[in-house]
Length: 170
Length: 213
Image (cartoon, rainbow over all chains, first blue to last red; front, side, top):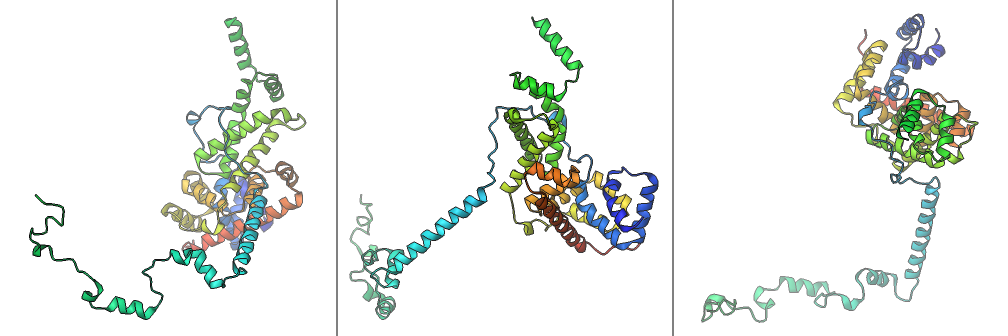
């Protein structure tokens, strides 16, 4: 048996549909030919599904559900769906490009445009926000007493022990 | 009346009615006869679905879907082709559509084997051919791994591989079944074989070196 003949016989060997002599001859060839031996081993990894006569995971007839022709059908994709997806992606890309060009070519500077599109109108921004970094830093690192115009009094210093201020009077 | 009906059913059960007769009866409005047709081919349909998918529920669903399509498409059936071939076309297309629907990236698939799968790979790389064939029949992990390998193929390649190797269809029969050109079938068959071999080699390369007997 040569290599070509041997490899053609793999499926028959796997399904045990070979004559005894041919079987012995194949096994002998596999023992003497490392390439065919390797090929048989790679074949053996897929053969349990591809070349088996009966799939091991065969279903018991008792587990079968009766055929129900009125059952709703499985959702399936049409063969042209990838084409449709590509068309949708192309339209989305065109819209993005047009939107981008419109935004960048308007009267305001691109940076302003970008800021506006992200944070809205400038007037929407928190009025306490200072764009001056030095002012911000000074405010942050100022002593605590100067940061509060009218610090809240300690409740223990109040005449009623702070109950009125906390809504617990009486 | 009841006795006549019972006699009719009994006589039916004794004789094996040919497919064409059952199909004619279904088309004439006796839809109950389709159940007999389905029972006749159910094993075959499920076996083909099982080559595509390991999951039992999925196999049941696809088998059911195939019969529903066959039932609704029965008026388009032409008797020149054996019913079983026409049904196989439906099953192959149902499975192919499902493969396309759940397509995953191939590189994710052949990785991270379970312990039994690793044992199986080691056995394949070390045991004698006879031991491998014997063990494959008893081991679920052999089937799981084979399904994993098939999962690494593109839906077209996998469909061609199953129809060619498992169903033993010719290139022209596959082309007719799937509605593809013969050239496409040949290319897909070549790529499927090449890809399977490459993936299997990768798996075997991970196994410990073969012990010389």
